[in-house]
Length: 574
Image 1 (cartoon, rainbow, N blue to C red):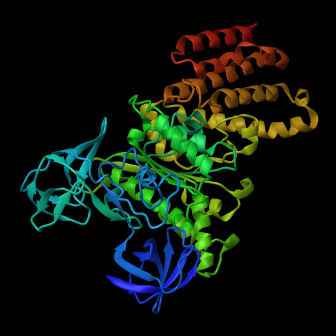
Image 2 (tube, one colour; image 1 turned 60 degrees about the vertical axis):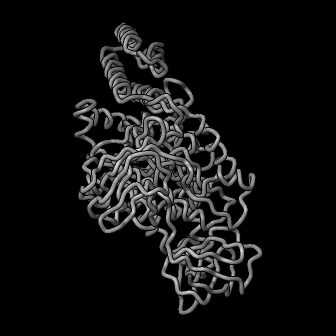
Image 3 (cartoon, helix red, strand yellow; image 1 turned 90 degrees about the vertical axis):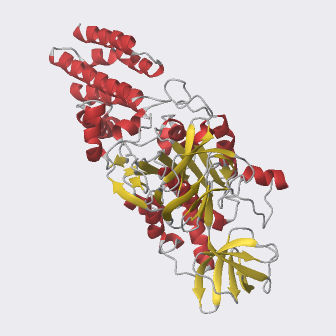
């Protein structure tokens, strides 16, 4: 092993001499063997960012170069796990040392003792390459984990065995002598290779009406959720984790407050998966890195999360990665950049902020993985926490350049108890055109035109409200008063949704479509009533139109909807 000594220490940044590593090699620092990663090499000095607290270490202590980059263990046992930023399992660490993690502690990412029931599907003599499926393991009830050849290996199968194995047992061999196991390691900063990338042509159905109707995200797409404190980012990401039609969820809590992360860690294991009725954790990997944990590990946590997501994508699964929040990740880069005395960019962030964000989000996509014809996808939903809700700050702006969906959370809507608090005037999705064909085939041919009508009414409402604030609603022409009534129905029936109600927490595409059609019918009936001499006041006073929101809370709503629409028609024909 390559050995050297500490030359200088500045917080999580350590300068070492006497070793000759490559960029991003992992080193062990000091007597406690703290874990660090090489981020800069200048002459004979090596700069290492340490993933743990460096207080108490001093110049002259040893530095060992492991000659390997930061890697994660990929294999059965990832699902249901709760890790820190560098894939140390937190429940295992708690048993070893209680509630506070001590320094220099190491624990393997996967359980080394547990035996898995492996059923081989490949046979001796088969030609295999990176990504080829060797066999299957039932990782959690109903979730099949496919054991694959590591992406950088290929050859003929000289041996393959079924049976009960631990992740370190040899299950087979290639003709070149390479031993195959249930697990393999992969460097977190290197993207896992794929056969080909596909166009994002199908939506990630989330069950949230405002997203599915107005601002959809494609499978393999990327979305940003910027929002100030208390605007509902975490509840929204939990709803998306629970209801989106992804097979696997990877939730990265990156630098969030301890109490918020505690909420996630205690809530998630209690959540029931609506699809299987079993715990949601059965198909979830949690990575927890709170704001008081070392900053360097925060920077690594995002890469750890996306590498685990890519691993499940390569099995042919649809994966949703929640990153909460990339602002804290950017702050970690800013802190390390200042310790390295790099030239700061805007607001002190490093000049390469945009590049790093783009590299992370570009790892999303819908793909044909190596060694299989089944398509897999990673959809990345990144929360951004701009200080004071200012969307013009660098992290939000850099994120907007690379994401195609922008769900802007609004503190004013949250204060009015309008949830999800997505502002429909500042949010957008650039996937509408790509998803058009899917909606026509699978939902309804008029979907896009209905969405267009909803948006134009909401935009008109915004203009009219400015006039109302000056002169009052009675001064508006009658037709515009009716427009305000229709816009209120859109806001209260279509856009508002109760995440804690048993029925309203999830809304399928058919129900969303029926709500949009009903609102447009009411709009047409109200405008016809005006043409037939009815006064706007009488239209505003009709009671039955306010009952439309009742259908949100009923599972079999068809008869109720018919009854309500019939009453509205009667009232508007008087």
